[in-house]
Image 1 (cartoon, rainbow, N blue to C red):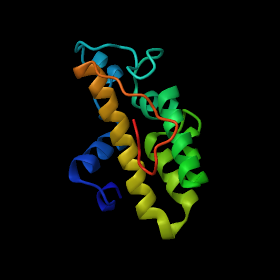
Image 2: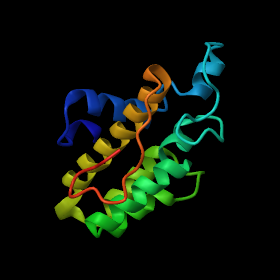
Image 3: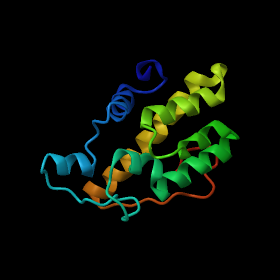
Amino acid sequence: AVWKAWAPAKIKFSAWLLAINRLLTADRLMARQWPNCYFCQLCLRNLETAGHLFWSCPFAKTIWASLSSWQHCQGLSKACLPNECSSLEKVEAMVSATGPAHAKGIKSMIMLVLWKIWQERNSRVFRKKEATVKASCRGELCL
């Protein structure tokens, strides 16, 4: 159902890669014996896996908590489900917790947040630029 969300094609494609566990995070690069940084570039603490990067990293957890609070949407707090859950299971839990009337919109917002986290990771890896999570975003997703 990634393809039915309201988002540009590149964001849908990125979400699809995450859903099938094919994003080239450090763990996957290591499995291919490609050079990489090993550590998550957002927290510099753990091996960078898709699960860590988007869900367990303190940086990502802060974003999900801020978004949940800002949108008054407790369904977004489902991002903190146990690590054993796949990314797809976490997204499905978040969408189902919001109800069918808002499912397409919340799915699109989740995909945009995932995309922004991925962009921030890439900015740190390839451009050595670092943003911070702002406490107050004035109605927009800020990194």
